Structure formats: C-alpha cells, structure tokens
Amino acid sequence: MSEELVDIVDENDCIVGQETIHRVHTDKILHRGASILCFKDETFGELLLNRRSLKKRVGPGRLCVPGGHPSAGESYLAAATREFTEEVLNGAKSKIKLEPLFKIKKETDNDPEFMTVFKTFYAGPFTANEGVSDCFFENIGTVLDMAIKEPESFTETTALVLREYGRRMTHAG
Image 1 (spheres, rainbow, N blue to C red):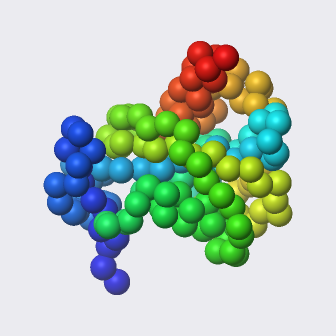
Image 2: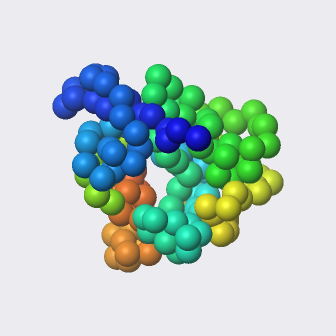
Image 3: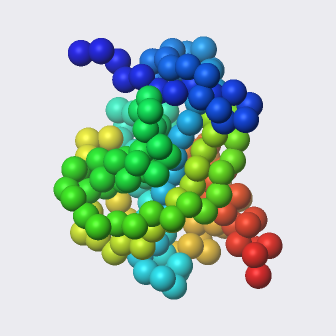
C-alpha cells in the first residue's frame, strides 16, 4: 500500500506540489490541516474532546479535538468531514454540518501547516476509532482555561487552536 499523499503549499496557502505525509512531517514541509470544534449544542457550553491513544506518534495520551490532514486534492471541508467521521464516529455516516471559523498558520507539534478550524454541533453518539481512547464533552470555559494554564494536557496544536478560539471569541463581543 502506498503512503498517503498530501498537498504541499507556499506561504500564501497555494498548492505547489504533493508529497507523502511521512516526508512532510520528517522534513517539516508546509502543508494543510483541519480541526473541528464540536459543541454539544448551540449554546456553545460544552466542547468535545478526544484522548489520544497511547500508540499515537504525536501527543500520546493527550487531549485533542478531531482533525487531520487533507489528502492530495481534498478540500479543507472534505478533510474535516472525513476526519470527524473516522475519528469519533468510527466511519458511521452522520449529517454533521461544518462551518469554517478561522484559519491560522501554525508550526506546533513539529508540523508546519495552514490549519482551518471548523465548528459543528453534534451531541453524539460517538464511537472512537483505534487512534482515540476516549471521547467526552467538557465545559468550554474549563477547556479554554486549561489551554492557557495547563497546555501540556493537550497536543500542542489543540492548545494553540483553543487559545486562538478563546482570543477570537473574547474580541467578537
């Protein structure tokens, strides 16, 4: 089986080629990623968190939100939908609706990429795949506070996404 190809991008997030996911991580080549902030309902009161499997290469046992890399030629939205379905629905189909929240350039987790962050509302049920040891909702205030005071509880990328979300929500009002 050949290794997954992803799009590599320039500083303007324009596609300039394709490379294997292993190579972009090993050589720290700029590429794309997507994260999903899944809220239990429209009150935005509780956020879905995953605890990563201890077998994961990056952030084993740490908290994160669903997400991953678009395959070569795949849009941010399509990738976010696929990753959410794979990670927390274990492939089961659902009618989730993702809306883009913001895009950032990040270099956390030794993984330089443009990250588009989406939101959705979905209360479950959840069936985690083998890369996720647990899925649960947590109070958003608690989560945002932890991202600042206990960032080591999360993958570096998730802590960054949560801090950026908190900053934007503070300035949105």
